[in-house]
Image (cartoon, rainbow, N blue to C red; front, side, top):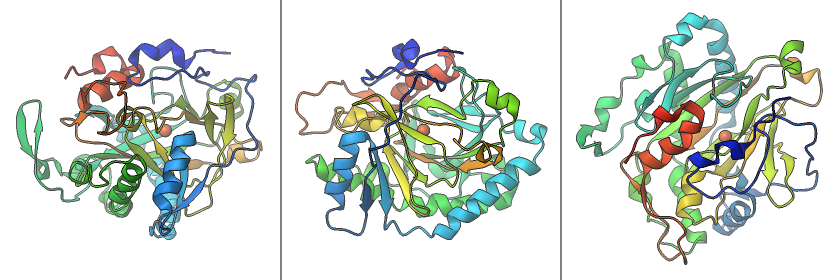
Length: 354
Ligand SMILES: [Fe+2]
């Protein structure tokens, strides 16, 4: 049994993480059968309070009343299976992930999501530049001014154009939720709700398509997890509720894992490291993972998921929000913050100094 711990990589972290857990699953772990992740309805006047309470408590919430057509989510599952299964490994490897700005974008083969420990998922990350979604304004990156429009060349990022066309509908629909969600979080924290409107208009995001193949006996016995325990690096993540069991969240209060089964059509929302940093730890970046299903029959099913991580552009500065008392963290450039953390996944040379 590999017993690597998150704390073995603690030098990479840019926010406080006191919790200790095994990266892969461990038979000694315990489960929290009682804790319920709160459902927050975006149509309710109490949304900001409900969302803030949920995130402050555990870093996760379930969004309802978000207005995204659930039929899109059903179709996405079919499209992901089709895309990963119809392409040969050679076809996929032509798009192998590379760092562009902060984010490692492109295809990740099975066992190679990170250097930390093998896991049982293939992934494909598409950022804003992979979608033909117009975004305003020039961007200053490492001293150069680019027109963001110049980054948008979908054919370079997609193996087949129909997938670009389909997934841009999901990215576009969920992009409309970014400002209302951020405004609710800022309201809860006692800040000007519009403080991030400009930064998050046309901001960067990463839509990650995950394909978990059916588990063979060999995979099942290997000790690998479907996806290792980790915290998201971003401001927050939208994850349309997956169909197949597996998502687990670490409750830091009792160090037990919560099995999260959100209603179909809902969106799971969790806060990441950027948000923990600017909220001065009020909204934690909570550990989660994808475990194998308890029912052996379900392990033979393909699992898909498509989280969308919301970032600020790499030239922005992450600063503790105004009005929060006793700031623990100094301002830091997003690219330095982001790549320092993700060097734990991709190697020390991934880090970019601000
Ligand atoms: Fe995650």
